[in-house]
Length: 385
Image 1 (tube, rainbow, N blue to C red):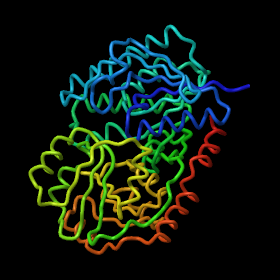
Image 2: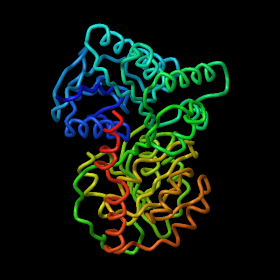
Image 3: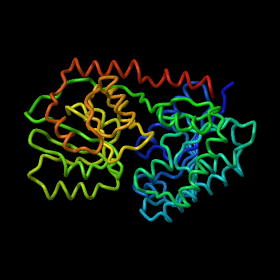
Image 4: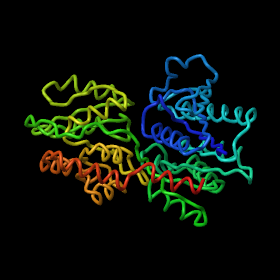
């Protein structure tokens, strides 16, 4: 008999980004491992802060996608920088969750995505029956990450968020963390708590691995969210373009600034290609020499999931974010590391890079298959669910 599992998340396809991909793969992976999976998520609105076309004007929507039942709930959508509006957006989804909990039978096993902290807190508070298996999937350490990003200050609100964070950990039966730093942080507070390292390993068919034709300049690519944390606009301003081309794919808060930079500097070999689907992107990335993975500031607990995705593609990486990601790049020989926040060192490293051969790219791919395998990780997780 299949075991019922409910996954609660604030991000899910057709939304883009690491969080959406991670939960989609977890849900579909569990389904194909003989679990009966359903998902609770808001009507899609990320990262635009507007309900996607086709979902507007609805209070809820239920669909079956890849044999997984998706319940999409009403949310007050906003990506405003106004903290009050952002809080209203999170609380609106929390209210929708409480409404759903009141009128629907909830399985004994529930996987809750965190952050957002308040959404996770709502789930842990209202589903905290002793016989329920509450699994908290922690992808980033909030409020610490918010403090490092400059979104928070150590005031009363921050202390409230810390209490919420502690409550969520305390009520969880099992905690999944995407990095060793996250698990270290949690185990320091709750040493008796069962934890599991659950990386955002991808699972997709890889296009043919080839080396792009050399045209004189090193072709560097960034693909992903164009948010404040990634700092792509600053990167555009700081790179030295003597020997490189810089190509950008994605969307987000900095998109307009990047488009303006490209328009105002036609003399520079920097190109913005807009947003493409993940499947198309995998093929497109094969034409580039190096993928850059930057973070504007080092964020404790953060490990960009692009590391595992690009490794599977056999794409060499230039990592510029500090923390645990540096260890992964260096330990698995996936590319180069530049000191976080040091743009002079970044440009110095770039000046030493030569394009990888096809054989070298295949070596990266093999490393990913050996050490970053989604199905092997899922098999280990199933024992604990």
